[in-house]
Image (cartoon, rainbow, N blue to C red; front, side, top):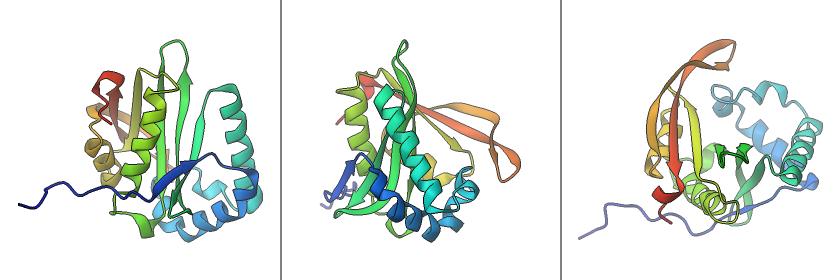
Length: 182
């Protein structure tokens, strides 16, 4: 009898970004603008390699002070997207997860595999107790990623996100360390 669960790709990895990744990151953003624009408020602000470099510099500072960890999502060693832990609260041991993926990789389990790696770091070496995902309510693919990973739906955050000049609702999901299954 065939399995009802699709296996996750094993050729997905994460690595901390370097400043030298700015050209490739900017090229990937440019190739995905139409897919990113509805959901990512930073998309219109990223207009040059210098903007991508500034993001990578900020990510390096976040990692250095332990408030955010950004990873490049790689598939077969090639850049496929970005994921992160941000707004890390050291006292309460929680953080938020963000992610985006090259449209050519969508629907293949790539982000699910990447976030499994991220969660292993979050609940392992980083010692977090809770991670949350706030996804635009209309971003069904992002919500599905959270649900497939076992995040629990907590509710709607009304008019929480400002996207393309209008406020929209977000669905919040969370996962606790004791709920995490590797």
